[in-house]
Image (cartoon, rainbow, N blue to C red; front, side, top):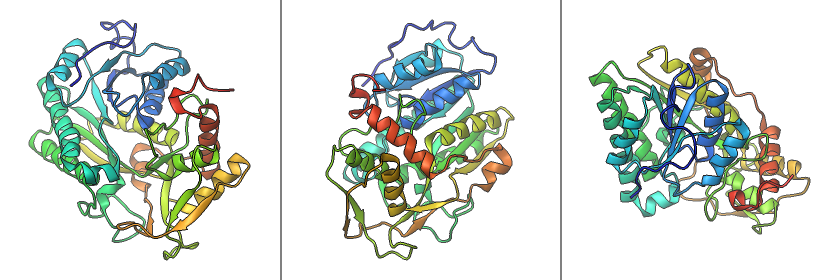
Length: 364
């Protein structure tokens, strides 16, 4: 269990009064999407406080965010399952809203450790909601996932597609949390909650200083591909090449993490309109196959990425991609970075930081 402690020299008392746009608490702010979102929030004029338990993230990631932004960020080591530590944090700061990224996210691990996922993801979130309510902070953006849609009944996926047909405990936690938030808004109209269902974040910050740094063997396609390309792993397994897709490999919607981060700023502005409950897909609306992604990274790396065809995995589907029109209409947001840019930025991060945040500083 984690207790509150300050990991920065920033002035605690003035941290939330520095900027006129309000003070945003970012849970899980040391993670992949969290760090990029913190940068965009600061660039947009918000004061930010970060909490993370650093189980799946690094203190180094936030040091680099501070370098990129040229400012100190109040950082607290807090586990959301420790409600008292969370309550103590809310006593120290006057937050105007919360962006909630914190949680466990490995699909395979969730099947092996379902109770842990329910405890951390759902229990941590209900603790957060209770403490927010106790402190009259009723503005929240939730980092959800396209996994709530389960197996697609139609494509592209819009926000009206049925949810709940999740095939793993991780996806179920996202679905259950969404339902909790819907019930909360029904019971108390003072709450403003934006749920962001996003697809597959890839890429990295243009500086090459921050990016995705998975612990152990990567669970996702592109970090694994990058580690193969840099020589850390032998080859990538392509699970099935006999799907009903143009090249036979699975098709997914990949979105640049910087586009995703900007989407969170757009959602923050929507919250400030007292929007009630809103749900948006954040994706490109474009499906890319596994082979499209491998070929694009090979192009960025200037060399082929070794792969082999393997048997399909149980539960995998042929295609899944978003219809992001509602976010464009109501948030004024649209993904602008294409496949080549995603892979170029990912490759820059990987080559500058071959061992992730454990590297001896980014190599130029």
